[in-house]
Amino acid sequence: MKPFLPQTLPLSEVSWEPLIPLIAKANRSLAYYDGVLQGVANPELLLSPMTTQEAVLSSRIEGTQATLGDVFKFEAGEEPRQPERREDIFEIRNYQRALKAGERDLRTKPFRLNLLKKLHGILLNSVRGRDMGRGEFRKSQNWIGSPGTPMEKADFVPPDPSHLLEYLDNWEKYYHMDRPDAIVQLAVVHAQFEIIHPFLDGNGRVGRMLIPLFLYEKTILSRPLFYLSAYLEANRDIYVERLRMLGKKPDSWNDWIAFFLQAVDEQARLNSEKARAMIDLYGELKQRVLDLTHSQFAIPLLDSMFEKPIFRSSHLKTRPGMPSYPMTSNLLTKLKAAGILKVIRKGSGPRPQILALPELINLCEGRKVY
Picture 1 (cartoon, helix red, strand yellow):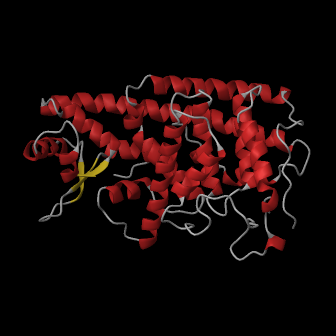
Picture 2 (picture 1 turned 30 degrees about the horizontal axis):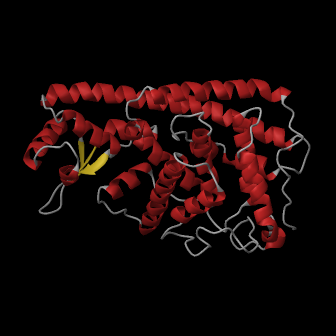
Picture 3 (picture 1 turned 135 degrees about the horizontal axis):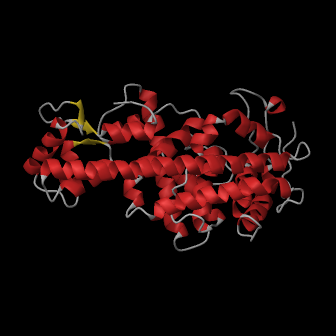
């Protein structure tokens, strides 16, 4: 099997007319979702669990098994029962760090290939794949297939590394072009990145990370808090098949773009519903916590619980705006008695208890976990 030859961007064979209804729906759903984001005083804090869930799902597409609860419990000091989950959690946390680093950079300067390498370097820091050219474009041929599959029987062979910078230069120029529709442009940007496969490992996660960062840089979203991995995981076979067919049959790019537009439309609506549900839950819990505690520290405490829905009681000592530890313990006791908090590990001697905010975790997971 020979290395794939990417088409030069912009594409010439896209048929726009059949895409117009999908373009309208995707743009409308994204605009509504951004309206939800702009209606939140502190979306990064309030919607923090959604960011973690995206990291979990994007990593799961690559084979990790750790859940949202596993990540939260680990951050609270609870080691996973299966040792391999620990490695999964590190990969998920690196994904979060890389996404935040990308947002910080894009606040002051435009996207460049150096940022792409920076994201990759953070993603593979001290985890599986760290010895696979971390933070550097590949200099050797790679291919995609089942473990142990030789290149001759690979599912896909990315471009020859000797032409990699040429393809990436064209891709970067296209990224910054003014195109008829930015979401269609993003569909092409994402697909072409996966075709080029510029790294030896981590291409899928970096490619999915580019989606919210692109929408943020193009000012389609006020924050890079758009998460597509849930849809892509649920439709993984179609996702992979549409990518693999690009350039191999007529209308393959239209088929891919149509799939991507539908993914953005559906996921934007689902993200809007989940974000609104989290905002509503925050409002409900705010009133309940105030009524129960009659404390000026009720809101900082609730904010902390939304940022970390599973936490050690002792961690609250370092939070800004929190009272003395005895007073904090008294507040937590009242919330436990009211069923707002649940003990998932009892304290013993120097080992502090671990508490969970079940309603928020269940909402993020889409099922009853606690």
